[in-house]
Image (cartoon, rainbow, N blue to C red; front, side, top):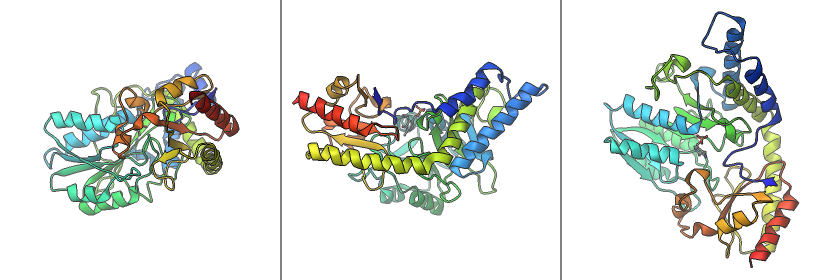
Length: 374
Ligand code: PMP
C-alpha cells in the first residue's frame, strides 16, 4: 500500500512516536500541578515543546497557544476577534475557497448579525488581493486568508496581504495548516496577527495544534475570549488539561521539520517532476490544477479526462491511498474547483507525495488502472 493522502493526514514520524510513549507511560504528570517532580517535569516539557514550535515558525514562544488543531484554532481566533471587537465593527473578510473550518465559522457568525465578504480568486486559486483591499471598510475587524490551499496547493501572497492589512489597520489571520513544514514560515519576516496549524499534517499526532496570537500595539499578546469556559491553562484563553503526550509529540515533529525540511522539499520536488513527466508522457491529456510554479511541494491536483474519480480511488485503493479532494468536505463536490471555473470536478484526484514515495510503483499502478478503465 502506497499512502498518498498526506494532505488529509500524515503518518507519525518514528522520532515523534518515541518521544510520546514516555508521556503515556511514566511522565503522566499534569503541568498545572506544582508540588512534585513529575508535575515540574511536565511544566518543563510544555515549555520545551512551545519553544520547538516557535523555532519552526520563527516567532516568540509566548504567542503560541496549544489547541486541539486547526479547526479549533480557526474557530477560536475568528469567533474570538468577532466577540472582542464587535463594538468597533462586525465585518469580516475571507475567501470563497477557505477550509470549511473557516467558512462555517463565518457562516455561524453571519447568523449572529456579522457581515462576511467572501472574496474571489483567479483561475489558479490565488485569492484576489485587490478584492480584499476594496472590501476593507471602517467596520472591518478581521481578514482571514489561507496560506496554501488544501485541495490544489496554490500559495497565496501572504506577505502582501499582511502588509495590506497592516496599512489598513485591520487584523489578519492565516490558516497555515497545509504549509508549515513545507515552505518557510517566518513570522518575524512576515508578521501576521493570527495563525492556525495542526500537528498531524507534519508527521505529528492528531488532536493537537497551535493558535498563534500575536502582539498588540503595545507588544503584548492579545487577549481573546475563550471558546471553552474552564481552567486557567494557556494564559486563561484555552481551558482544559494539557494533552502532554500530544504536546511533546507536536514539539518533536516541529524539531524534525525544522531540521529536515530543506532536504525533504528538495527530494519531493525531484519526485514530483518525475511523476508529472512520466504521467504526461503516457497521458498527454492530463492537466494540473493550481499554480504549478508556486504551490505546496508534493501536493498535486490532477484532472484525468475520462475517469470518474470516486470509482478510480476505490479501484486502486488496495494499492494506493488517494482521494478526490478535501477529507473535510468529501460528501459534496469540490467548491474549490468550482471556484476555479472547473465545474467538472469528478475527474480530479489529489495526490500528496512524500519523500518515501515509490514513484515508479505509483506510476505503474496508476497507468495500469487507467488502462483497465478504458
Ligand atoms: N485548514 C486546512 C487548510 C486544512 O487542510 C485542515 C485539515 N484538513 C484544517 C484546517 C482542519 O484541521 P484539523 O482537522 O486538524 O482540525
